[in-house]
Image (cartoon, rainbow, N blue to C red):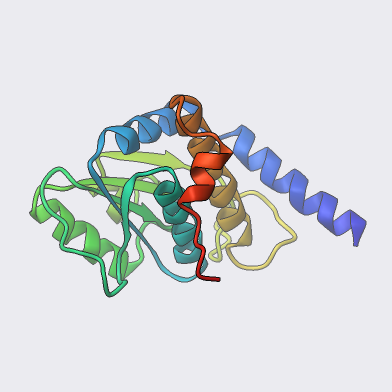
Amino acid sequence: MKLITTTVANEVLEVLERVDSAETIKLADELQETKRIFVAGTGRSGLIGKVFAMRLMHSDYQVYVVGETITPGIVADDLLLVISGSGSTETLKNFAIKAKGVGAKIALVTTNKDSAIGEMSDLSVEIPAATKKRLPQEPDTIQPLGSQFDQSAHLLLDAIMVYLLQRRDSHDNANLNRKHANLE
């Protein structure tokens, strides 16, 4: 088991070392400047998106998860953050088309910046990880399906959150904890 754990951790580290820091800083800057953030993903990528949305909420960002019953309509100058390994998931592509149609910005976290959603996006962060498609250019992995992408996206988005928090003086752990759920 230790060998498997070490292999998985090393795979993710290798992927994250290949992510362009300038792209992540550009996404962080956009998140910080945008009034309202909408996060979208499907499957496990959607779960990673919900984790990130929660962190943003803890840090006083106005954030919504697409598909939740209390999510309002997106409007001009909002940001739609799409998390999609392939960058071509049909439902997410449709969300991007609608968002673009009302003048919202689109950010994509993906393995494929040249995808259908990537072509519509105002900015993209490329995570060079394996997806469920196992394309020839993707790295080898012992993990099933898109686990390598999902884990890498989770850690990268957490790193962006740390970056954002370091730029704000008022967000220590006590402040973050005040926004944490207390009906649990």
